[in-house]
Length: 239
Ligand SMILES: NC(=O)c1ccc[n+]([C@@H]2O[C@H](COP(=O)([O-])OP(=O)(O)OC[C@H]3O[C@@H](n4cnc5c(N)ncnc54)[C@H](OP(=O)(O)O)[C@@H]3O)[C@@H](O)[C@H]2O)c1
Image (cartoon, rainbow, N blue to C red; front, side, top):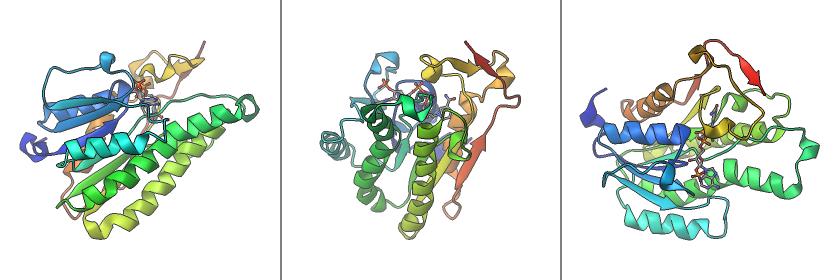
């Protein structure tokens, strides 16, 4: 990968403190991009470089979110990329979720991304080139047991990204979706299952970061619309 091609990019990433968002941040920084990271707890990942600017934001606080995002946009007028990644998984029968749990789940995995996109769109449209990448999931493509709400948010993100791509193409703004399968991250820490122990049971974080960076690096006329990454051998380990 040519380092100079990514230098000069400044990318806003939600959920930069851990797992997939952290890996994307690390790869972008390594290639010379500036990263603006959003999370609730940056103690988990705080690289010692002025190329990384962390902002402590809880994306479920929807009333406060526009104020935070506008502040970030005014502090970083050169932003030309956005990776919508923050999210979590909770897997159970629908009847086991309270209305407030349902709303918080949808706000984190879907509504926050829609609101931030709404706010960043006018800024990206003024740039010569801009990219928005949504981190979906294999669960954006097929429904599975105990995943009604997770699938609802990820399917919706997929529809949102497809429609947004059409809406933004004439402004040289590209929209991509990356759908990883099971990847070893703290995503599983409160769940009763996780990927199998064999490294062949998980998608590698480097490959997800690589897919996002490929979307940024595609030639101006190319849109990498959607990438699915699956583990070679699917094994789920139950506690
Ligand atoms: N791991 C997998 O197998 C897998 C597979 C497919 C898709 N995904 C998707 O990948 C994305 C990242 O997941 P991950 O595996 O990297 O999990 P992770 O390690 O738990 O990371 C989740 C990130 O989201 C942030 N976040 C969560 N709630 C937030 C909130 N209310 N406000 C601000 N930030 C919040 C977390 O930061 P703080 O906790 O510091 O706020 C953290 O940085 C999610 O959208 C997930 O659905 C994961």
